Length: 498
Ligand code: GLN
Image 1: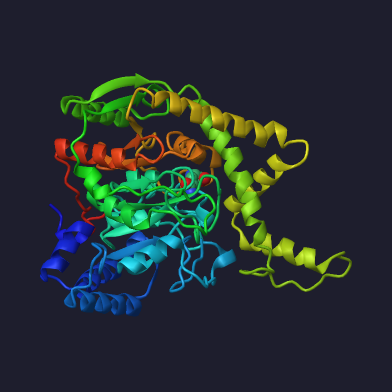
Image 2: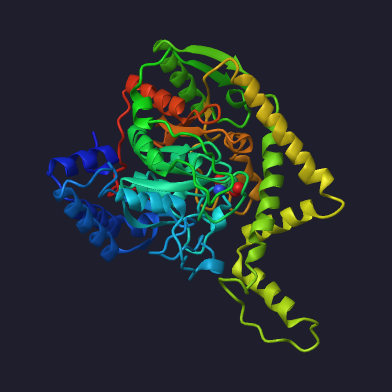
């Protein structure tokens, strides 16, 4: 059993009973951050004063009997692509290194309204492009389970912050797996909600038709609490869904008809899946079976096209979204004086700004996307990828006619070594094989810890459900953890392998 202060629901109970004050809780986490963040590099900005100030405000509210939300007084960390007035929002890019947003992202606003304490911002791959939290200007984050390993990405800092016990919960964003993959690598729970369930207002755009904000936590109950807080319609995001938000806490523990669990053949039989991961999943399937679930074989025949389609669509959208970083609107501007003979000083400035302000991976994506969208190639690449995307969604729709959820691996492998893939983009892209489908289809998915491999590194399982069925995912995850006797654990940070 971990100390109850680490979980949202545990800390919330202690706060409610008066056994703990929010100020003490903040001090507890800050002390851990001071001690271990140098090793992990999950947090890239901390504001102690702000944290203590908000903690005192929460303690006062509680004294007056006004602390209604279970998140009141609870420290939450935020991925640094979510706009905050209180902190810079850098996207781990030189381009936005000193950018302070004049507004809070919708999800940040919601957390603040609930009284959550914004304890700090977390590390990520530059502009959320990547899968190892190595491409940003703050240097790599290290996996708390083994510091020579990546913590995944792009929301690696938010996942590592939970694993290392730097906050009770955290927010990340997921465009192609950036919540689920780091959750799996760090041995914590992560949820990517349905596209549109959570407003993208103030989430710095990467691939707008794929991006969604979600949460990390130690267990399913905590995911439900955070998701409850950040979900719901927001008129400032035109793709935000105007649909009722269920009571996720109630859904987690509701008694339901036995689940019909689909096993994705193409995922379980994939050549890329490490045998240890497959073995862990087979055992997980048995847990579902013995708890009364019906296990059904399911096929998603277009799985093999999901990586190619994603790596066309996401860069295309990125190239358009990142066009705004031109040295004029905001952010970094290269210090260039007009060189003699150049036609346009403005163009020259923009060119230097973009080549100096963006790192190599972001530049690669912009080039890829610009190429695929250019006249003559649009039909062959972008339009084709959109058609494949539709086929992938159709595969899911067909599968969900017979099952309540789909089960498979989150990642092909356990966390790889830092530096191992960062210079080999294709290898890194292939790591996203199991996660990008949910983004292309817009459906919700979670990753939950199911065990460890021979090296003691975490293994995650992915569950996917039809649109808006986050409740099914949470309930299934909760049931699985109960049946399998899962207890959240923290790595031995003192003995952290390096
Ligand atoms: N690894 C994927 C990419 O590089 C996913 C990133 C994400 O979900 N933000 O695009």
